[in-house]
Each structure stands twice: as C-alpha cells, then as structure tokens.
Length: 400
Image (cartoon, rainbow, N blue to C red; front, side):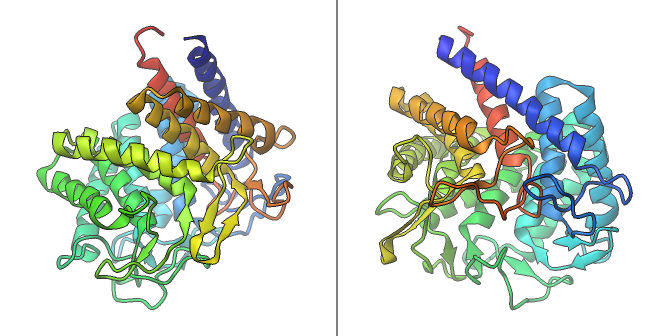
C-alpha cells in the first residue's frame, strides 16, 4: 500500500530530524547532561532547572531510536542521559528521583512525584534493551518495588500522586499549576502503566504482571467514563470523580497504551476488553477533531467550553491512536484521521526555521510563542515515539 510506504518514509525522516535537533542544541557541555530550557528561537537558559521527566524522556527517546535504527550516535546520547540521571536525579538517601535539580545538578525540588519515577522506570527499561547494562535493569526493578511499597493504595488499589522527599505526606500533590490537587490522577496512572509494561518486557515477573492487571482494571473500572468513553482526570483516594474536563490527547493516547499493556502481559481476557475500549475511546476522541484534521486540546463540558488550542503532543498521540483504531477496525476513516494529524503537524507544528516541533497553535491560529522548545514538559518523547511506533507498525505489514 503506497500510502503506508510514504507515511513510513516521512516518519523515519522526521525521527532523524527530531533527534538531530536534540543532539545539536541540547547537550550542556559546561555542567553535564542536557540543558533545562530553550525558547522557540532556541535561545538557551543555561541556568534553568533540569527536570527529571525531561531527562527520562530524553533517555527513552534515544534508547528507543537506537533500538529501532541501530545508529551508534543515538546510543552515545542515551549513555549521556543515563549517566546524568544516575549521578544527579536518583535520591541515594531516600530512593526515588528528584523532581528537579538546578543547572549544576544540585537537588532543587525534592518532592517524590510518582509520575516522574514512572518515566524513569520506562526509560531505564528501554535503555537496558539498548545497552545491556544490568545496572539500568536493576535500578528499574528497585524503583518499581519502591513505588509498590510507598505509593500503592492497598485498600482501594491505584497509586497516590506524590510525597515528600522522605516519602511522608505532602500538601501539594500537583504535577503542574494547571492540575487539581487530588490524591489520584489519570495521568500518573497512565504512565505508571506504561512504565510497568516496558519493565515487563525485560523482567517478566509475576508480581509486576499482577500490578499491570490491577492498573488496567483501574482504567476499566474507574478512569474510563462508562457513559462516554472519555477519561476522568482526577479522583480522591476512594476513586470518587473530582473533575469533568475532557483531555482529547490523553483519550487517544490511553486507547492504544491500554491495549499494548494487555498484549505485553499476554492476558487474553484483558486484550479483548482493551481492544473494545480502544475502539470506544478512539470514537470518543473524534469529538475533538477540527475540520483541518487536528485534534483540539481539551473541553470543559460543565462550562460548555472547548479549548481550541492544538498542542504538539496531542497531534502526535492522535497519529498513533487513530492508526491503532484503524488496525483494530479496518475503518479507513481512522487511518485518514492519523494521516490528517500528521499533515496538520507538517503544516503548522513542525518548526521549519528553528527545528523540532512547536509547542502548539493558539485559539486564534497563531504560534504559542511564549512556550518552550525545550523545558520541563517539552521533550522529544511524544513526537519521536509517534514516529517510532508507526514505523514499527507499518514495518510489520508483510506486504511492505
């Protein structure tokens, strides 16, 4: 199928372009590791804090790209990220990872955010496949054990959001200022699931499998709204809903990640359930499609408000999630949604002057100039993963 060959070719080239940007612009040659912040014009703030999520996502991206392509330069940058995380982000006294360090590597925000630890597990697991370094596998297992010990809710299942450095309770559980200050969140559970799934590939442990099954159950029982197949974003510790915001990007991302988890642990019952939920969630996500093929950011049903911004990561997840829905249903409309998201991205999100992807387009159709090109949240993970995932899926078609 010529269309798929062209799609694969373009995304293979785009993956190379994304990683070339990160190799050229982001290494911190003075203080080690990678810079913490750069604006839309690639102006670097050399004294910006360095985030654990950004660094874990850099480690994952270069490791996964090396595992796909075998290019030695990707392994070198994965090594650089691994060494920095090991030296500066791992809390050697209390376990876990720091949320941020300063530009010299000194601990800055020492809160234990479960989301950040999950991404570190995810990245270390991928790096082990790339490098074979046993220390990365061992550390990933240690972090899994720590999360189960400190964060897992033994009464109601699921994971509590955040803790102080020494794993005591903390008043501020939020990932960012825009988030609700609640005990449990969809976002953290989604990426804990993603992390545990990747860890299972290199450590097929029965306890880990059980926790993956419980996490999928959390989504099926609590997080996916049974009335509309959108994700519920925030909960108290008893799984009572605390928000009605719809996040279209997370809807379409979770659609394929849940099925992937069920497939990796080879649970036929959960595969059947998550296949159906993937189809339902992909259909629900189409409510956020604009006429130009892009996917809107969020909606607030209780206020009858649509947030018409088009963020880079949402388009990346639309590419994968709708492609997955096409594979499950055979409906060419879903394949078209995936390609349309990529066409919109090529037209509006790719930064043809300064490289990489823009943060997004605002409600008036203008570039969101004040947002980062590199930062705590702006990273090579969503876009490189979309390229890698679709290239791998198309490669699996025997006719190609």
